[in-house]
Length: 230
Image (cartoon, rainbow, N blue to C red):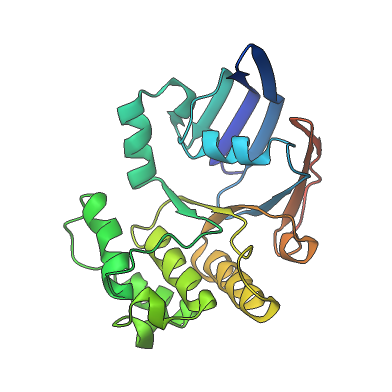
């Protein structure tokens, strides 16, 4: 059996708000296997976004450990977490965060530049563009694309450097039902055809059902995480 690509142990995060300490995570344990698609659900304030940010190296934990492969994310410096985000983790957010003056192709290419990826284009990226259905829209700017197309460009940008993990935070939150399904189908195809490990936060039970496993959070804890067959 392969080792988990994500291993979270006794993770805690306390935010200091004025004179009040807010405990966002209260001893979270989680393992994600390579190639798994895991959905994290829970009400607002349950800690799921905080967990997402710590796993992705966007913020440090108060205590506990997070491992991405062999790296202990919780022990990394700011520079180390930045490098992790460049090389190991891709992000997709509810807001597309595309640069409005650049074409879709240039929005994708900038991710390669930021990562210092000077190699030629990954041959598999052509297959990714086909899965995303945007190969014919690469010379268009964001204002010329639908919401669903913009999110698919954002996904392409997130996976262009072939990160080990794709973290998706409410990726369908700004989309109508038809575009939501198209984006979720793309994520499933990336997972099933290319083996992309995906950790997705969502409020939508229909979206959560795309995962192999649904992890429920409440009050900073995981309250249910059944094993799931693919």
